[in-house]
Length: 253
Image (cartoon, rainbow, N blue to C red; front, side, top):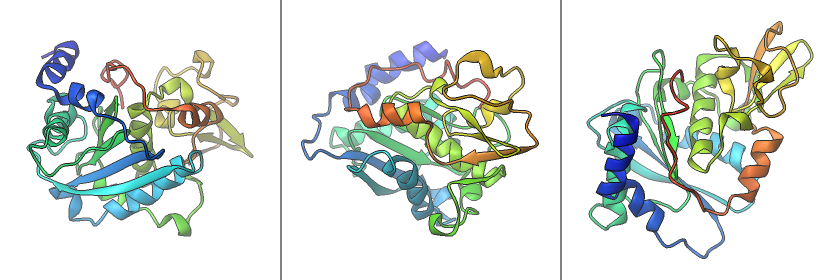
């Protein structure tokens, strides 16, 4: 099944369509709910993921509400494949229709899996729905209170950025909303560009927001804070999104 056929199948089955048709709540909050697969749950990682999501989005939105949805049983323990197959969107649609105890929220519904992070793509985000891998790595991250928003490039830090990256896609952010800026002799990549900044063939002149330095700096750092233009989009987000093609931009993640 190609990516366009997948999206048509999702909409036909109601997985994306049901979420788009949900009546938005009038409580004035930006709602993000995080679920974990059974394999991811063994690391006790849900609360840690919640902290970093709150750090990134809460800096921009004072109406942020991040909640934990619980543990989900899936057939595909992979952040990309559980989306590519339609399984995770389908489970959310079933819950939205009252067919299960999975209760989607209006804005971002993200599933954290224990999928591998060494072979791309590792996760994906589309309108209101996202999934990522790497639970075992995220579990190695310190608590937000014990670290800083900008950290050295490590695998746990990269995986944490991927979580933020896919949540960003779920409300319409693109790679061009990411940026790289200088800090001394280091290049700091923000979540929506993330490790793409050091991917083969990446050109800082391609238009990423705020890219002002040569990414071949002496040191590589990762930030858990969105770039200025990404922050503007997050702040302006009002829940209205068109159905996106999530696989067009995830060929090398």
